[in-house]
Structure formats: C-alpha cells, structure tokens
Amino acid sequence: MRDSTETNAAGAEARGQRATEVAATDEAWRAFIVHTQGCSACRSTGLDCEPAAELKRIWRASKETAA
Image (cartoon, rainbow, N blue to C red; front, side, top):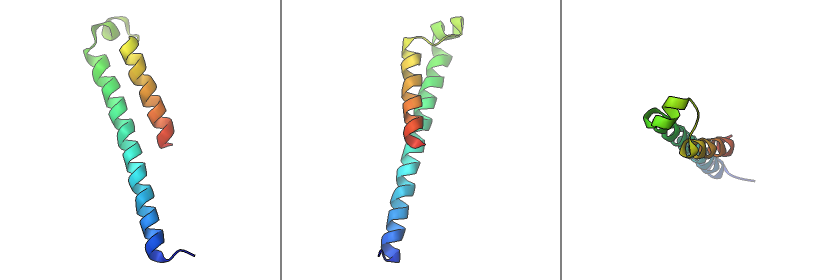
C-alpha cells in the first residue's frame, strides 16, 4: 500500500503531465491561428493551405493526447 507521500507525489506528477499536455495543445492551436491570420492564401480563399492543414493536424493530435 502506498503511503501518503507516494500518493501525493504521484498526483503531482499526473497534474504536471496534464499541464504539459494542455500547454502543448494551446501552443499548437496558437501556431495554427497565427499562421492563418498572416497567410494570404488562407485569408483570400477561406480554406486552409497545406501548412495550415498540417498545423491543424498537429493540434488535433495534441488535443487527443491531452484528453
């Protein structure tokens, strides 16, 4: 049976991992938004260009990992 120190350490580690995953998801979304705001192809067509589509794919994968 774990003592309270081991339990607290495990909980802190899990919270730290979750915070890292959430930060990665936020960073991926931010990269997508910044790209689409500055990309003339994305802005003029309203569609994602290839780099934007890749950034969105990375964001979705990051979001699934964080879930």
